[in-house]
Image (cartoon, rainbow, N blue to C red; front, side, top):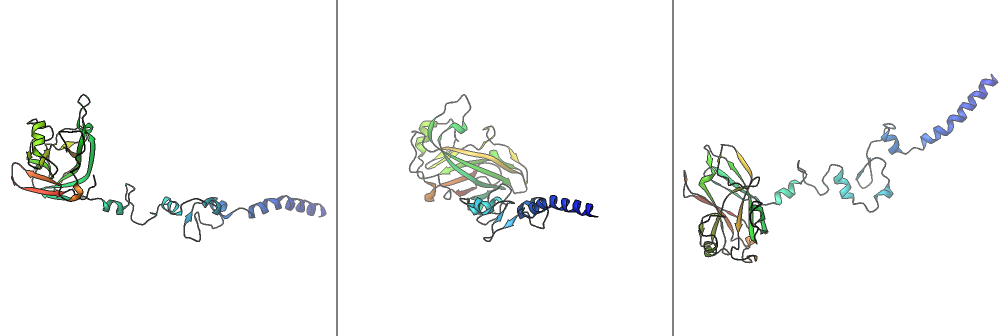
Length: 259
């Protein structure tokens, strides 16, 4: 009996350090091993949920708002869409639109360019200047085909002088043939290959990735300082040239875009 008692004491003595080490393990380590009933994410007093094993001293210099949003919740409120932008951000972007002959035309974005690089082929000459790029979407919400070759896309602003375009472009139609006092026109282009968009949209079809490119100062490479859409006097005009509703026109203000 004494022999077995000595063996038991020896085994207990060997196991004791291991048991003490196990008791000293942090709750985060136990959690990562799936034991102890501790949740995988520890919640601090300030309500911020931390990753397993993160200690308080590791929070020094860390923006808790960023940490919170990094765990799948928006730091400043608002829903997060699939593209990663908050619904509040999307709602702040202007998207003016109007309907003409079954086509809903929406202005997606407006950009000012300092050269014509976006609309030239590799072998064409790049020209510095002041250019306006207007991205659109078009959707057929009517009950007939929408023939885009029957639409004319125009820009109206007091800062545009018709004679400047006639003397430089003549009848070439490089940016659109229609010019009248403070109104110029542009050809609807496809971003993919810069081809003119002149086809027909089926009922329910939505067209994206198309744009207009206007020359704001055809006689100089300088910026047209008088062109200020924010003043509220700059409009995109969409005119129906042929077919049903010919002669009809809608106006879309560009006042909400800062360019």
